[in-house]
Picture (cartoon, rainbow, N blue to C red):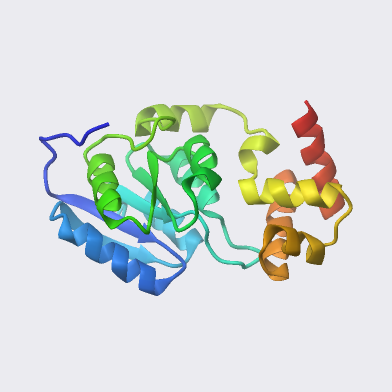
Length: 223
């Protein structure tokens, strides 16, 4: 969707990314558009959700890195999008990633974002930020903030909606009997990352063990 030509250049932006260097780069890109001000940046996902849904520091547009850190208790980018969207329709969310877009596109849309764009393509990134900031969406499957808020808030979430794509992939492999070390090799990541994926999946599915999480997930997938 093209940007609104009548968009007023007084927009409040915020940025969540686990890499401070990337935050600097994204801030420079946003400010180069001369559409408004970056009012805060965060590397902490929980704090970003608090600020984005609070009364005083709520931005008009929130840029969310979809692949946040490896901490067991850290929220994923998908979690952030969903929590913000559940609570408000006043914040437009643009998912950003350094990975191929198809990895996160579906889950970003389901979680209520207004688009997803690669960090590597600066020109496209500028266009996406401008479009979302002016009330548009970036990508075929994405909805506006009001529609997404109503859907995310009112529809019960199945395991397919709760789990990120990487969490689903990890549980698929766990269901095949692989250890976390073997799963890390298959997913081409570090073992602590797999530990984090399993911890998040267990918390979201309200189970105690990774085996139970895998059983719940495989049952959902077969349904």
